[in-house]
Amino acid sequence: MLIAVDTNILVRIAVRDDEAQYQKAMTLLAEHQFFISRTVQLEMEWVLRSRYQLSCEDIANYFALLLQKNKIVCENEQELMNAISWYRLGADFADALHLSNTPSLPFFTFDENFCKKAIKQGIAPFITILSNIN
Image (tube, rainbow, N blue to C red; front, side, top):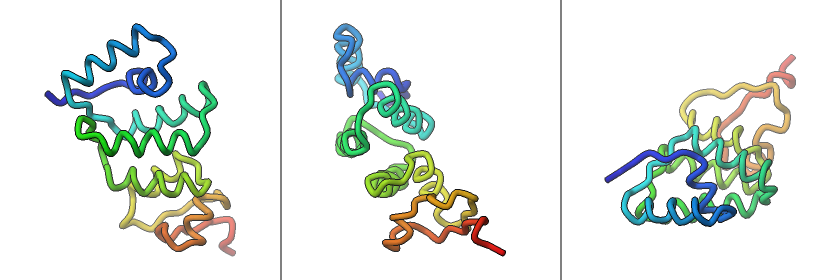
């Protein structure tokens, strides 16, 4: 059965900092398929980075691992893969997720560093940075 899971279940699996909760999370995964919503994706990156001090690379690798598991279903899977690739280039994860989820719309921001490397490499959609417009 497909079930939606909260961030804390995925964090327990990632960091294994509470053995009892880790075991419960793994049992749940053995019995069910997990659905990971966009909001959980966003919160998971924030928790792993801010609370657990994981590197961008480690977090990106964890997301990539989740995407490879047949017991994991991510909302907006292709968009998440795009966001992860831009995140690996130094984009803020939230910014990358915002942009990847609006691929067919013009995107406007005041943030001059918004997905900068991905844009420079031509792998992100066009973005208008309003501070550069006269």
